Image (tube, rainbow, N blue to C red):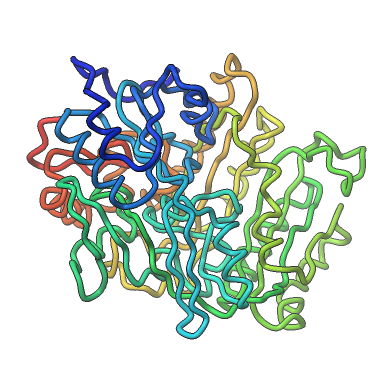
Length: 471
């Protein structure tokens, strides 16, 4: 069991909170407790004292006040999809926002306001009714809240930037229990911080996004090749696809072939490379930019086609179902020279689980053009990301799968910028959080933490420790 925090010395009087709470209070003796404490990462097994399932902002304010007054460890749950498992804690209080599912789309202004329990699949279903979208996750099950607060890189990020770049305003409940709205004209410092600074400064209870005309059909999907083509594919991605117009997002995935019906039976369980693409421009122009792939011959399977954006958003869902053991490590890369490609491929050949993979993808585009100081999200100039995702079933096998992940991460470290995307961080410590922002920006975030959460009430996150914290 992974632990987070310690038990309080005395049990709080829950009757007080029950009287103030419109939503449901779930304790260990209640039916549904074990289900309510589960998060996406099956490696996380924590037992909170109770779970406050909020029905609205007033419940969030009441729960924050109760936790603060009783010295409780606090975990905040939105979609519960983050690999670090910070949405649940041992011996403390979970403020559960997963039932807050409101979505309001204004097609005239191309804006959306959503509550923090919404997933990207739910968001996109509503927005795409009007042919609109904003950059979301690579799978539909990801929660809007945590993804956006951590920055948010997805299929549309080269065209429209990160999810957080498209925020117009955020409603936040602070550690004092105050409700604030943060935008370019209100509480501007807080607005700067929540766009990439995670849940360090309060609990976001609603998000207002700028929407863009997308689809409803885009050119997207996946091409599957045997591992012998991996070197050539990565070079084509580096030399051609990475410099394509902003309309193209591409990601290479190295893994063992799943027993999928569209793949030949003889390749099941063997090493393959997958190219995932999303093109949000004209169909024929997109096909032209993908044409260098024809040099590699026929793929094992070609699932790239004009398809609804909502379908593209959910294509990867089956491989990322909840409940499995997970351990991730990631970093930004300064480039993808041949030496880096050789290193990645040699370690990928040693993959230890049929559920694991590693992803390499270029960013840039609109994401890279936003100023480094415009928001808390950092490393805008980094051209590449590598994300190593170990997944397995049996907890007793954890050691070898985690070792493979660490060894691959260390092997590519010489090609790293030193930075990392916040949403790909696990439980990696304060030094790695500093690297996620860089020294100057980290100190600016500390000053913001000192202002809005000086006692570090909200510390189950990629934590930015305040100067004054006694915790």
